[in-house]
Length: 74
Image (cartoon, rainbow, N blue to C red; front, side):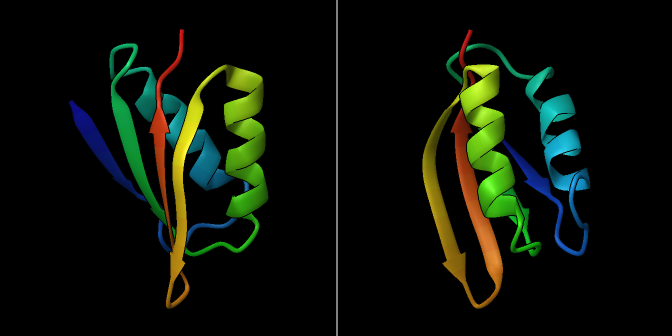
């Protein structure tokens, strides 16, 4: 199952906080796809995945919209 989260227009730390809450709704091994516009989110999501035990599967930037796909760890 993949859950999508739109955090466009929100600044640090809100995208990561909303992602953390969304991760609680999905099962281990499922993915969360996040859309963000905050350039700091690149650093924030790398750090979030590293410290929380999740895997950042994909990180892209297209016309100022950052897309992340995170696989929930356990």
